[in-house]
Image 1 (cartoon, rainbow, N blue to C red):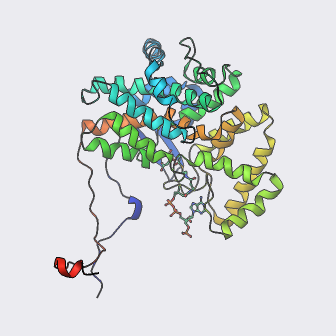
Image 2: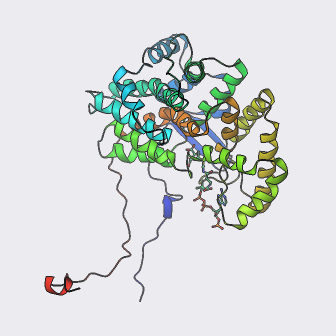
Length: 380
Ligand SMILES: CC(=O)SCCNC(=O)CCNC(=O)[C@H](O)C(C)(C)COP(=O)(O)OP(=O)(O)OC[C@H]1O[C@@H](n2cnc3c(N)ncnc32)[C@H](O)[C@@H]1OP(=O)(O)O
Ligand SMILES: O=C([O-])CC(=O)C(=O)O
């Protein structure tokens, strides 16, 4: 006789667990808004700093608010000598996401106000993370290349300063713009796995650093943010546009997951892909990346024919970052540099109207039984 089980929604698929005023993901129209503004319109005319302000404060900044916001961000970018020394001691074999996770944990341990739940302080902590995470990512890239760190430059904007800290140069404005567009598109996406993780941690009345550390762990996986790296590894494995179609059909026959395709919410296309694809095409034209365009178009065509599945944001972003010169293990950390805005906005929103997140499970193990006497259970 089988016990009656309640309805179980594996992976919480389709379950609405709370409200949010930060972003709206609309599957039926393949669209996305941040605080009511369509994301492609924000990408077309805003800086990443303006979008970060919008995500946190609910409105776009006026000129004065933006100037003050940028000043505050630029003033917070540096890491202390001891922070640099500690992060430099991590083994080169660890993933840069591990470095980032450790860095956030360290920043939390060093912040005497880490556990102070004051909402004003929460905004300051979020800004501090936004300012410092690129410094950590660039430091990590350079140490793996055997190069000394380059300190942040407070005269440069968020995106330009990141290139400066990684490579010692700021690229041409078109490349910078493509990068900034990717940051805007990655910034926020409602209750995705990493954001939900951050909300679960916050719901126990834990601190922001703990929630962000956990979110970094959730984003690292290849079913989530880690897919932008996996996409580029896949494209390198394909290697040649002429092989793409056969490679994909073979991979599907072997029941492999094709990275950068599919989405839990969007079943007819990811709202952000058309904008990011344009940015990728622009990068490919500037950086002689036609081969990657042809490989991606062949994979996209074959995937649609075979499975009817569309690409997600990670699909055009992976090769775009590759063409910008970033090492592949940096792709997901760059995602973090942007998503820190969405995560921290959700942490603040969760804390403002908190309820402990604790779902139920249906037990499927052994029936209740008596513990055998020691003589019986230890007998051999
Ligand atoms: C920023 C982001 O996080 S975007 C997501 C990034 N992740 C990826 O690109 C990883 C690849 N994609 C996937 O693994 C999935 O599409 C997910 C995890 C993103 C979404 O998964 P779910 O909503 O749970 O869909 P699910 O995995 O149930 O897929 C439904 C069907 O489509 C298939 N499918 C979905 N995505 C893919 C894919 N990328 N490759 C091959 N088959 C796929 C599944 O195998 C399944 O087929 P079945 O019904 O025959 O078993
Ligand atoms: O919403 C999701 O499940 C994943 C995603 O696209 C994101 O986090 O940007």
